[in-house]
Length: 330
Length: 213
Image (cartoon, rainbow over all chains, first blue to last red; front, side, top):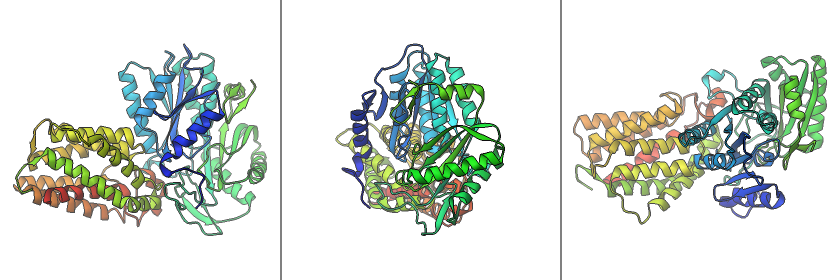
């Protein structure tokens, strides 16, 4: 398997070096492996810190900037950051109004962020956390580690980021972050497994006519293997799973997200089917994103995330944002 | 080593042996993880124990307890994922339980391993049967406690613990995972050995190697 890397051990740091070179609005601390805004902590503004394994680009470092995150701590490929990274990021963005940790519900992310939050609090920092768990593919979640955090992470980061930018207090920013998570549902499909640089081969084997339904974002297999079929039918499976969990209605924020290896033309085909499905429920995508936002390296596939909108959430979604991977209105 | 007590050098040799065996078994652990997780367990542990080896190199250590505590905090700082905090906590709690004694008896080792287990369970809230590292660690703790009660030598006691861990890891094959990444697979997690239990068995086997050397 061919990869454009220098060495397996330096993948993350080498990528961060490029990110820093390409985006002067970001400061990259390669020693602590964190990415922060060049503008530094804003006095009186809640600092937003998100992080998780690398390999999901542009998540998270691509969402650092005005109106969204203050810092990202990317761990090794598909491996959560260590507490030291989270602490360094929190200290770098604390402008005195406290820090919000945005954490995806994966055991490793939860444990490392929890440890970091405890240590930050011991140092007198005000810290709140939101756990993103939007993946409806996880059934019987009482008997598992709970629903995974996937595409809704971007929604939480954008909407909480917009509110933080207004100078809202930590409790308010945390409240809206939790509201976005509660209003969001996702489901993902893989047409192929991804190849991590360390493993050098696909993490699972999928036959030419097979797909994985209900994947997370770490290249792990999903809840069931199934036969490949046309986009319309696949979207039906995905949207039914979401609708079953949170009946679809009204105005929604909808993301059709590529897993890294799917061309845009296919993602737009999927989005067309999603809008038809919504129309069939008397609902619509009032706001939308189509593209590669929460990826799994070179995996082929897509996920759909639906967030039921309120006036407040719409207004915050529309607020200006200026990051490497998401920018409008400014 | 034929004494009835285990000294700091023995614990240092144990950690060295873990590093060596994790490096050798890295690919197997990653393959186990690819089947039901996200294919990085071997890589992550190897990164952690490589950092531990660097951290320990050329340093004098006062006691087995402080050595293990340093191993634990290094793993927490370097590994990430779930295995970093869980293994880090295990070594740190074991180190704390040993205190500053310079030589460790089988009974003290048993208490330390118990502390490691309870640290892991507190953090990960897993119980036996969930298909996690606890399924290897808990039987090892029991075997060691029993050996201590029966007044076994360190070699016999550690041997019993290592064998119990290995059997515990093998027993995870038919289980359905209820914790960690594998839990998302539901019934599809059945038929694969848990990578965390497998690496725990390696860690205890490394202790057996160090003690019988």
